[in-house]
Image (cartoon, rainbow, N blue to C red):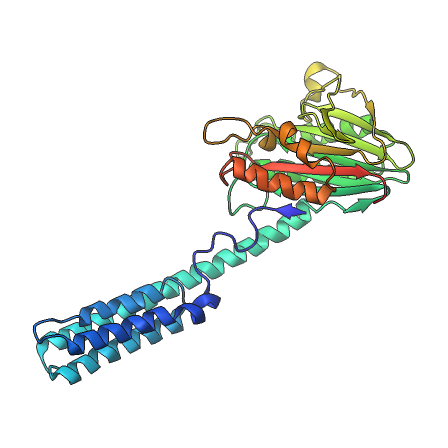
Length: 372
């Protein structure tokens, strides 16, 4: 499974880079020291030595920052000795000021390091939660090859309201791709509910309609059980979704669409939209019309064909001029790609279209039938 941003993205500093970069503050100390010693008596460049620890704190840890501060103070003392002004009040004040500033920079480094450790811990917990909730899809399932992608709208987020999951039955592969209403923790909670319900029931329910009814009922029950509790968020929760069943020995795909964007079918060198004739209400709203029956539609899905499923975070992504991402047009260039290769192309192209800033979470699943 591809994911954006990659681990470590967005860190402003890396302690491991210090050995290569420490030459700059050392050279700065040496240059200031030599120039000050050789300058006329009325010119004093020693105060510029504070730049060395100030630069170091941007890329190094506490120990190296403290070491550069000590070297800067030593250089100031050397300047005083070489110019014969070590005992003057002016130089003593400069040395004291340099010690104080270096100490403050070391303290700043300590605080920064502590926050960085806390952030790493939070990130590791978030990554663990993502792997539990939004597990990567298998690369192979029966005659299918599968690729998937999750792109959070927020840089440091691991998961939002977009979701996908897969399950095996004795004769087929079942998949779910969906998009929960809303954002934040509430959306993650509802996504976790749907994923759990799907994984528990996908291999047990005899038909796709019964599976859709089960998930719709689970969503509505989870919302209605807290009615009347002022401390609980009981706002209507729902999710657009597409349910798939792909038989191992039949060149077809069975599909139920619940308000979700239609998939793309790659056949030979062409890309066409696979529109469902019936689009049901989103999952969680089935009871609004008094009946929550679901009709299955069947489409040809031959060896070599590829299906591309996505959430509206892809199809409704806008560039700086407000233009939607032209998914179908861009996808025409990737008809011969394998699922994971197609996903990589799509990820790079989508992020380039939005200049790296998605307005909504995005999820993509690519499925190709047939042996390599």
